[in-house]
Length: 176
Image (tube, rainbow, N blue to C red):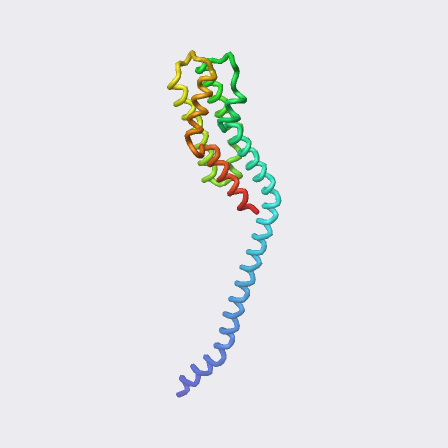
């Protein structure tokens, strides 16, 4: 009987402090976790203040890139009446690739999916230039390549650069 009395007394004296200690532990843990989340949120907000202008600048530069390699702009800017088809083709492809390489660093500020779309758009433009040039004699005047390439693009409803621009604009809209 005395042993069971001792056990009951032990439970009576130790149970309330254990309940208080475990409750205190859980409350302190929750408080510290909340404080850590608030600090992380503050860091994200301050980083966003710094990175948002950089991200917007990246979107602007990639928009310019896509506009520059769109057929109507690219053909007009690169065309020289004295060029042959082969020279014009080389000039167009060089411009597309140089502009792309100039904007390589912008990929760190945009989503990987958008970067893949931009890279694929570049490849599509180069492929389309090569396909158009393959159908024309290489010594023909450059305007023949320009006409053929432009007609190929008109046949398509939405060329790759326009699709990419639409996706880019929708990603920018998500920032706001």
